[in-house]
Image (cartoon, rainbow, N blue to C red; front, top):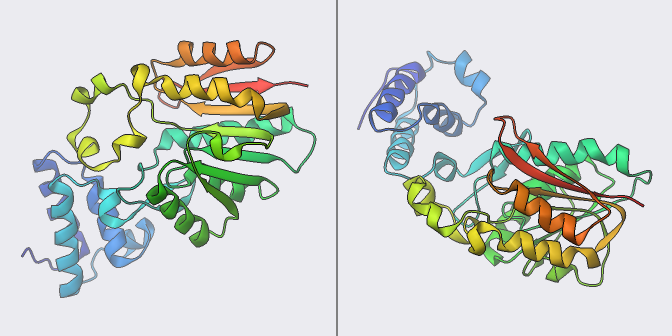
Length: 286
C-alpha cells in the first residue's frame, strides 16, 4: 500500500497516478475531501497534516476504484448540484452542471410569467431529485411533485429530500401518468435523450456504471419528448412554463413537438455555458 507523509504527498501521488491512467486529476481532491470529511478550502489549509493509516487505506482504495472505471461520484457517494451535495449511486444519473442551467433558467422566468406566489411544479423523471429539490429549496412557496419510473431512483431521491429538508411529493410511474387529474404551473424534465447508436462514441465509464434507462431513448432519443408534448396539454394551467434539457442536436425537433402541441406558446431553444443548444423553454401565456 502506498504511504505518505502528509495530505500534500497523497494528493501528488494520486494526481500523477490518475493522469497516468487517463483519469482527471481533480478526482484526487474529491476523494481527499470525502476521506477527511471536509471542504476543498480546509484540505488546502491542512496540506502538511498527517493521514491516519485508516485514512491512507481508504484514500488508496477509492482512487484505485476510480482508476478501474467507476465514476468518482459513485465512489464517494455524492455529487454537488446547485450548491448542495446530493447522494448518488448506480440507481441514478450523476447530476451534470448543464442541468443547473435548467434550474436557473426556470427561476429567472418565474417573475415574468406569474403574478401568484403559490405555484405547482412537476419534475418528470426526477432521478436523484436534483431538479425538484433545488427548485423547492430555492423557491420554498412551490408545491413540488416528482415522478420516476424507477423505484430505486425514487428511493435515492427521497433520501436526498430528507437529508436536504425539502418537502417533495414523490410518485412512481411513467412520464406524466402519476400526475393524472391535476394541473400544473411548471413542468420540468431531463429525460433520457441519447440515441442507442450513439453508445459507441460514449465513455465506457458512463456506459458501464450509469443506468441505461436514464440515458437512452428510442426514435433517435426523441420518443420521450414527443410523448411529453402529446401528454402535457391536459396538465397545464395558464400561464405556465415547461422546461426541458435536450441533447445538443435535438433543439429544432423538440421545439417543433411543443410548438405543434401548444401553437400559441413561446418556444425557445437556449444554449448552455458551452454554447451548445441544451434547453427548451415553452412559455404558455394567458
